[in-house]
Image (tube, rainbow, N blue to C red):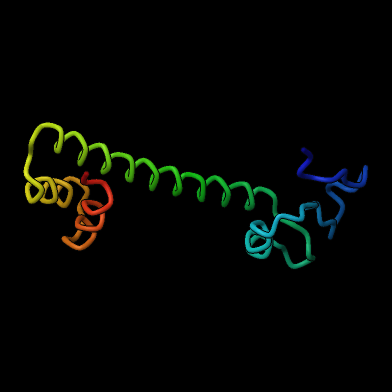
Length: 108
């Protein structure tokens, strides 16, 4: 599967050249944020933004997995529902409402 069509040869680096050749709509907002005044793309800015977004998603996924594991292990060890919810609140600095949402999702 090819995500990026062949781009014209020799266009890279020319003033005003748009080198973002992709039909992926997820990149449109990114493209708008890093477009320079000539209509070209600041690729360093685009890469930096993509890396930052990936790191944010990874951190969120890791936190979600940690909360899920904490709830499941505590439950397997016989810890009470209320105590586990309190632990989730404290260890992940969550409100009661946020912790309750995770408890409802992962408590079996």
